[in-house]
Length: 324
Image 1 (cartoon, rainbow, N blue to C red):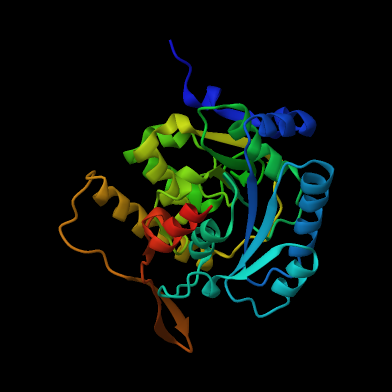
Image 2 (cartoon, one colour):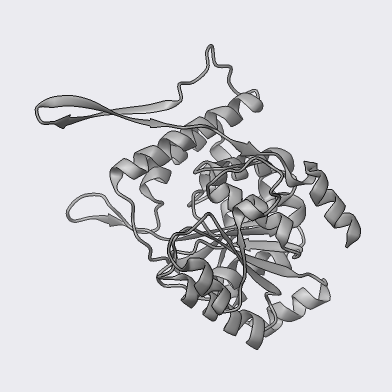
């Protein structure tokens, strides 16, 4: 009887901590690696992230071949600091400027495909306070050492308080546990084996990323998993335990907006996959009411769902590949 995916495709980052061995495997397969940080006002953390990755993974071990920052239009010194510490820095609006402009993490991830050259892309959120090279080599390990794995996803300790006396270690974030996991369980039970589908750290081969669409906003991580699952199946994916990740938590109102966008993205994918048929179009505003000066006031959050097509459908990208 075959073992379940969670047993065969779940790794711990320490399994790949022999960087000399990992680098030799990378060289044997003649692979190149691009590391991308999508940013928006990350001046507090971006310098440490670049310095650490460059020192350990480019200078000491040639595991990463380039580091790029794709910025959404920071108003602080994120871009200047990133350039100062040796990253290739791009403003998202300046990449493929002939296309309609969008602002969001998905836009940055998608445009990174155009400016980078690596066979493998590693995406790391720029707000990690306990950044460590394991976030990169842990994701690269399964991709380099296992021929069949094409996409890796990080998970880490994000403890959930069950009550005043009990804490559940290793669960997901609040939106994962309250929104994504129930949806996966209802429609794609196999995907419920993924501990943290919304984690912001993942890596994959270019051939995967360039052939899937990228929603601009919060739905990009969910859609990415669904699209990879639909096109290539669960066994091209793996997940890697990074132990612990420290970052700034968002408040409940912000998480509600995130959940709203993810739900819209999820139902969009369900329709495309012909898993459901909606009788009418979904509404585009999340509605909540606040009480101000004795009156109930509607606080509306309007969402325009924008999505980039697979990068391989962009002529300028195909032309760039032909020239290489």
